Length: 235
Image (cartoon, rainbow, N blue to C red; front, side, top):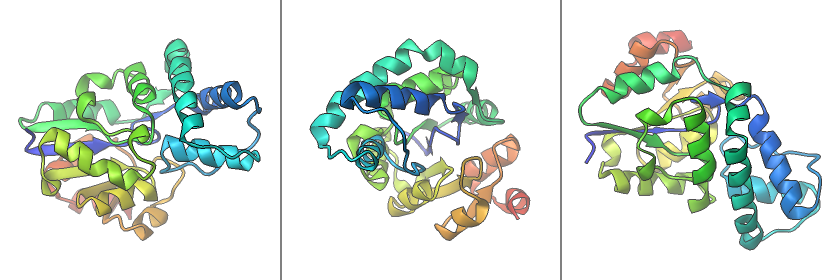
């Protein structure tokens, strides 16, 4: 049971693969469909099944869940095979490891991921940068479970045994914000991705922080909802 549950998005919230994750997606897409990837949708906040379907559509392909189910293990295998290169080319975002470690020392806090990535690639990404030691990945919610990110909140809460009122979602896209609000959990939006602060506020985020580097403030915000010092940095 958790007295506080922190649900972390991964890409551009905790880590930045500097495009290598997308390169692996492109390779898996080519292997499964036989089509070289030339276009990409705006993927922020999408789950992997939607990214695959929309990418296929941009290339004139119509796909079903069956095609995605063939694609997912290929993507997972490529991430496992190239984990060392992922580590070399990408990095954990500033403050991510410090915030995770600090929260991990607070009794009753459980941390996991709520991500559009499939389970296997999510595990590789956080492990590549040493962040997995702070996360209970067994209670996380992953992209293959639903096309709608908002539908991932309830399974994560149930697995942790935590009410929505005691959970916080941290993410960098309007999709993260809307998912948290739909699931009844507090949201801390981080402007470390491709979406600016105003876009995150427009999606409904009450608090937007520039990054995780002010880790003491971020921990207080997650634990107590105290927004004063952090909010001033977001203005």
